[in-house]
Length: 249
Length: 296
Image (tube, rainbow over all chains, first blue to last red; front, side, top):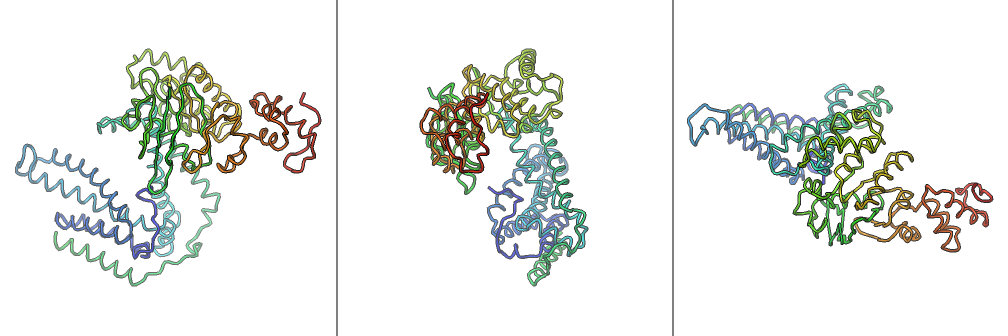
């Protein structure tokens, strides 16, 4: 099964957008989420992100991502309810301000995460780095660093899953139903993850150098990334999202 | 009595079927090899055995208990010997700062007293030739593999699952690992080992399960299955080189049987194959020059 950040092949309009346009669109959703405090608008942004997933033919990936974020945000929501004391109590220790703030923070987190992950799922890493170098004029070493960091997220996620399995198999109770116990057991696992990560990154760096990393220039790539009409439309949508966020603030 | 039983087990990762309608059973005390090409479903089968993966269809029974309803960590620590698993990459298992802590870590989740944990861990460290205060990540790849094995064996598992335990090891390290495993098997531990090295399989295992594309192709002793070139072609694996040579030139079963002698007893194997070679004109350039006479 493909991971959340793995590229999903396709020919949808989202796949055909310029990689930079996708970045701008994702960034615009993120900015809009932080400009506005309107809960309805934050929910609408979430629906927009989900819609992007279905337009890109990765509806199932979008729903999986949403489910993952909902679980994280539920934890965050409860924490906010526990610690925010301002406002009028509506039930036990829960205040109206606490509920509104918790909902706002949770929705913002989902709004800020979803579009970037979804748009990266419909963009080849090589295209994104190519566009950053050729169109945005970013030095190749920075584009490479960014792409490598993104590429390693699913790798390390998989690595962590293997480590957890290996530790469970030797009797560490990771399969407990108590989430706090699980969190306490995760900490010692940072050691094997760190060791394997450092080793892997070192190998990747040596491998890149052996293949002429420092010889690469802006015109080394053969592929061009022109802007099309659809990119213009997408950029207009991005601008409209921010403008609407300012209006409903 | 079956220690492990697969009853029409199926498992898939998304759209890719890893294991399809798999049924077999392994008796207590057996030493079984699980062989097949990469992607045949061997690792999935090992993870189904100790409940790391739960079957999507069918049932896996470990000592009569369905793994779907049991927690893996509890099965690992079961009283009277649980199920231990050695992963291909020892670095996934190692998490402590000293060899002694690493070995004792497996015992720390049970009911054993701390003094007893340290005592047992020290005994195993001594058996494996480790300095108790050595730093695990400063050890060589082979030594880390041995340490991971020691950490599994300290819990005295009744079932030992090994996922390519000899991968990346030189011959000496490989024999060190396998000798420890064989000693446990001779003491009654059931061993299931995924392995690509047919010399090791031929030397140590008494039973082979050959897998291809998630299905069980054959089940038998190495001696029986190594003779079936068609089977090995289908599973994309090759029997030991000595056996291949004997198969090419042998007229009867006697030479073949002697060629299947353990690699440690290389003289017997060579003495079985060389007369066959010298009696014929070797057509293939890959066989190299034929040595006249036996090995002295």
